[in-house]
Picture (cartoon, one colour):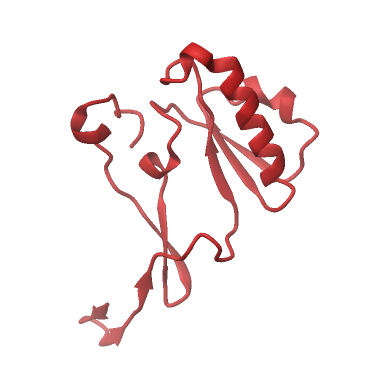
Length: 125
């Protein structure tokens, strides 16, 4: 990308999933998501995923009421919690997109419209 103001050409790209990263965001399912009909089973699966992630890197857990999962995760180091209302669990829809610009991370923010307003997404932005 050419920056006319400075005359500098910058390279911006989406890094591959195997690139080094500072952590992973996991948004937990709750009773307001489409996982509600099997919530206990799905939450247990997410907890198992979380336990594997923290063996390797930092984990950011996003949930409307993260204290509900703290007890299951108290023995885990390398975890941060962010209380945040969400409509769904897909972090790609409501989280920042990280690109590299001249090898430095830049967070991009997009507006998600719930697949053309088919699903509620007011809390995912």
